[in-house]
Image (cartoon, rainbow, N blue to C red; front, side, top):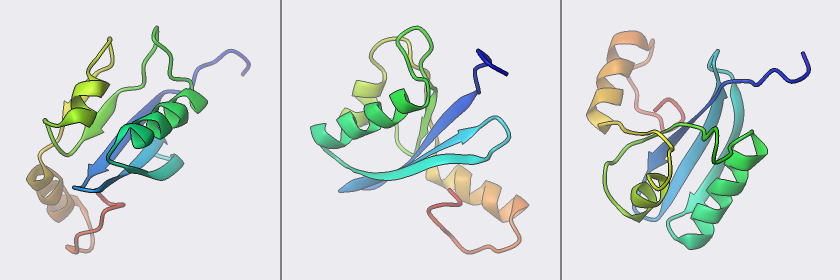
Length: 109
């Protein structure tokens, strides 16, 4: 339907030098994925990707990330965006309970 907004969520697999970003809809379908660098250029790429999927100051896309600290988290927390810090061990435990394979995978996180 025209005018109907799709609910979008962002998940970020955090690493020291880069971050893997995935955008999914309310049903968990992958809308986009991208690897960004851990610097201002990477943050700009993230904001552009979010904007392409309806992110705005009035309706920011919520973000879940595997850390609670660092410049990326601080930048994401400016404004009214909801940022959820996810403990990597919690993701691992969820995968162990609900996954067929017990093997770690960044896309699965």
